[in-house]
Length: 502
Image 1 (cartoon, rainbow, N blue to C red):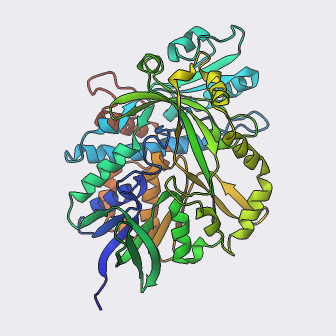
Image 2: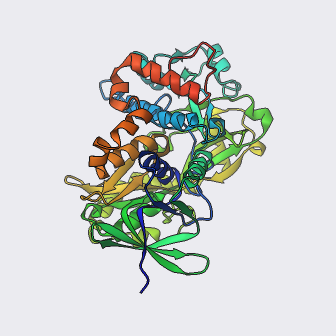
């Protein structure tokens, strides 16, 4: 009987998560042998594809749901500050790779685009003012501007102001140094960089059909979807970074830590405009507040997107529901994910989230005219002929056990790893892509603790001169790292008056 192939690491899924982890591991240990296995025929075909996500370099600059307001009116900025510093960690990694000279151009995946927040009504204005007052005192947000002046808003967002009632109550904040990120281009650049190194392979049109324990590692069964051939690979470490498909694979592993997790798939749609006459009047990402009773992922925003050098506008997201865990998945994904260990939490979430279910049904049933009505809250003079509907990527929100409620629906990302560090999976959704590097560093510290503190420590310190915690508290260091990142990624000119913050 033939021996199985053997590698150090198998990574399932060729999206931003696996690509980032693979390149990081290869930088830390050039001798490591690894294989990336992807079901589709190219990298970044699911959530990392630029038209499947908003491409916002999530840095807490404009996303109002990252700064919740308590009943007494106080605004909590902890999450926004943490996400901002996580994005700076991502930028440190991309800057490091760009400086190597073999990675390619950063302009292919990151572009400077201002980040704005926009609110309507007295309550919204009161919240935004309080948010600005608190955030702007923190060194990561000190470049933020606030206005209630409609003439100023017309300068900041010229597409959005014509056609409004003169007595409409409005306010906005702006940070000039936000970014748009093409995570598809970044993923494929990472994969290309990866395969230029020895002992690395990226294999497409391959489905992982089995995971079983093999001593201290795993035997991974892999099927070629074109010819049906199967092979088995022995790996010391397995990473499940397959977006919505990570949950069924995590369940297939049988690790104790996977028990109780379920998934709630939510699809998305956007309105997209490619008309250059419209696009040229909106050079920003403008986020507002979700409608009362709507979930956090429904926060409406009108975004400049830069994909392959061409600018477009996206508006949305409009949620939808399907039982698929991937855009190219199966309608059986959700029912097949039900287990004895997670049926309790899943039923509890279904019972406790009837409002969400009603919301998703109403979103699915919307007509194009109703979607345009939502857009006109942002852009009153929007014309139907300039916009078309695009289907976005699937998001599988996490369902997990909760001692009080039985089960909770969690928005965000979660890293689940085996006790012995031999397998890890990433579950959940936004702001995932923007903070991928921080999440993968957390994975390395969890699953390779001895190496992270020992033989890899020097290289980690070289790539990441400042991590999140110190960036949150050390203003001078934040300014220094931020400026270096912005110059390396060509977000500002080195000779110009370099802004302090991005």
